[in-house]
Length: 149
Image (tube, rainbow, N blue to C red):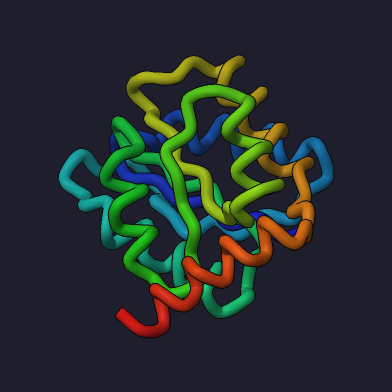
């Protein structure tokens, strides 16, 4: 599975750790940046290319990291086909995929520890959408909203 990842300065350090752990686990990683620490970078400039990669099918799942994860979540959800959420625990990481077809998790580099990040990331990456009728129905409503709003 090809995984996209991006972070601004607030998530740069955590991104480096996450890239290493998912590559070690055998995932193919597309790193959308930042590729070096720049305390003046802006999260939209880094998260938008990741979200576009999801929208265009370049990557299957994405991990967006900023200081709190909030800004990353807001901007990622502006791109058609992206279903991003700020995740702070493992249940939502897998349940969001299974029920809501979540395709981007957003993490706060300044508020989440390394071990919890590892548990969240792997809960997300190992989860699969259920395809149940009720979930398809709900996802269809979300897609209709995205198409027609």
